[in-house]
Each structure stands twice: as C-alpha cells, then as structure tokens.
Length: 359
Image (tube, rainbow, N blue to C red; front, side):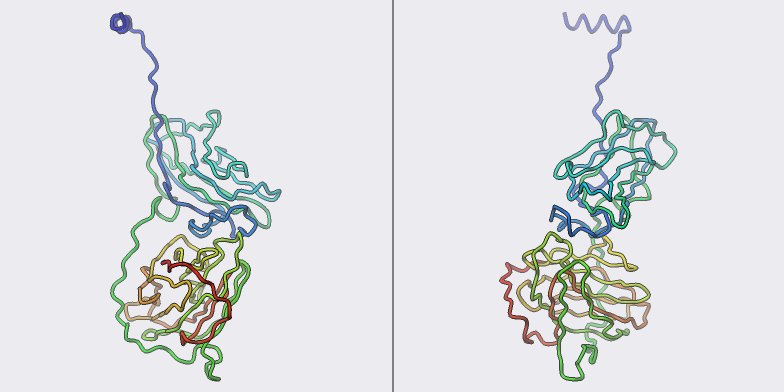
C-alpha cells in the first residue's frame, strides 16, 4: 500500500519538501580567542589562561557563498562576558545583527535566531564581525568554536580572517643558530659595575613593571642570565602572569612567557609585534617553575635575534636587520628575580610548584 501511494504521487506529480541538514563551516574549531582591551581583571572567569592573548576589540572573518542562501552564526562556548553599563558585545555580518552576547551566555553555546538569519548573495565578500564596544574601556571575553551555517550554499573563507588562518598552523622551524658560541655580553646588568649580579621586577597587577632599557644587543653578542619566579599572586587576572623579553625600538617587540596562575609553570609563549600582543605562538625549552631558568638571547649573523630557554631554542625569532637593538625586561603579575648567577639569593618565599611545564 505504501509503495503504491509513493508511485501514485510520482505519477500525479505530487512533490514533498526535502528536509535538508544545515551545512556548518567552522572558523576556529577548538581554538580560544580573547577579544577586548586587556581590562580583564574584573572578569568573572579565569579561563583566559588557554586563549590567545587579547586580539583587539574586533574579530573579523571574511567569506563568500556559492549561491544565495540564508546564513546563521553559531558560537560553541563563551567566557567572561559581563553585563557592564559601559560595554556591549555584538556579532554581525555586513553590519546586520546576528547575535548580542550577555553574561547569561557564559559557559554555553548560542545561535542566531531563525528570524535574524540573513540572506547573502554570491560574488561578494561578506564579513563576520564579533566586536566589543564601549567608552573608555570595553569588556574582555573569549569565544571558541565559531561557525557559519548555511542551508545549501558552500562557504569559502577569505581575507580578512583572524591571524591569517582559522586553525593553528605548524610552528616554523628556524635554521640552526650560527652564533651559539658568542661570548656573553658584560656590563648590561644594572649595578654590575658595583658588583651587583641581579635585579628584581615585581608587579601585582596587569600594568606590569619593566626594567627600563638595560643596554643594546649587537650582531655577534649574546645575553646569558637566569630567571626565577619568586612570587605569583593569585587573582582572576589570569592571563596577566607573564615575563617579557623585549626589544624597545622602533616599537616594542619580543617574547611573552605566560605562567599558569597559582602554579608558575609555563603555559604558553606568544609574541609582541609593533607594541601589540599577538596570537603568534612559539615554543622553547621546558620551564622550571620552582628553580632557576637559563635564558640566552643572541643576535646572530642570520639576521635574527634568537631566544633559548633552558637550552631549547624558541621557534620564533626577531629580525635584527644586522644592527644593534636596545632591550629590556618586563614582569606582569609576578615577582621575578633576574641574575647572572643561579646561586644568587632570592626572596624567602618558596613556591613549591608542581612538575615543570613548557612553552
């Protein structure tokens, strides 16, 4: 009987609507992005730890559709959105509101309502924007698993896009450092002429404390020193525990070694470029949370300045232009002791951290 009914419908030209599954195109599957202005100290959530450092107030992704179709946006998980009176968080395509995030969305997913779905046309680049807006400061939050959903159209992601690619790319391998035998530079440690062999940097907040310019590093020169973390205050300012090794001109550039809150173990390494924290990541040697860490920074004849942590070379270097660069160090949310001798005394605050982590 059922077969006869279907056959009769076909003969009579009766059609039924097809139930199609939506097509889902992930932009950052499994990757956390931190959006805002770095005023994350008042966030309710400390899970900023696993995210890229702040990427700015707008997160953009360009894409095209193969045919006219209705489009929705999905965000798999959200952290740290606050219902503050000075800030708003918008998700839009080509200026058309797709979502508005609030504190109630933290910890879960959110999708564009069907009534807000937007019909897009092929042949042009559409831009998905997730933005945190405000007055003097904006809200800091994180997103993960952002996707664009269509009914039938194919999507191709194009520029603009977050950090060149939607997924983490393999870390580049730099060539062998051609100046590993460079003699350590002398005279750069403050007070060295008076017999001092170390300095302390202490910062309890996100503003950080820097050493000031300590000297310049020319091609063929190297800095050899040791670092120990002598204090790490617990706070919700979780991405604010870091040690930075920086060149200072024309704009600050360098390596940021982030430390896990409450432990001091190495969490991840990211770069500062043109004075801005970037998502560009690097790895180096394992970090010793409860001991001295050997740091070597060297300017080499390959045109790069290289960082080594406990003998492991960082996978990202800084271009030197084969000229001298001034340098400095900066501590954020930590007390760091920097010394030319690992046996130098430290503050009497044993941390008792767990097994070493890495960058």
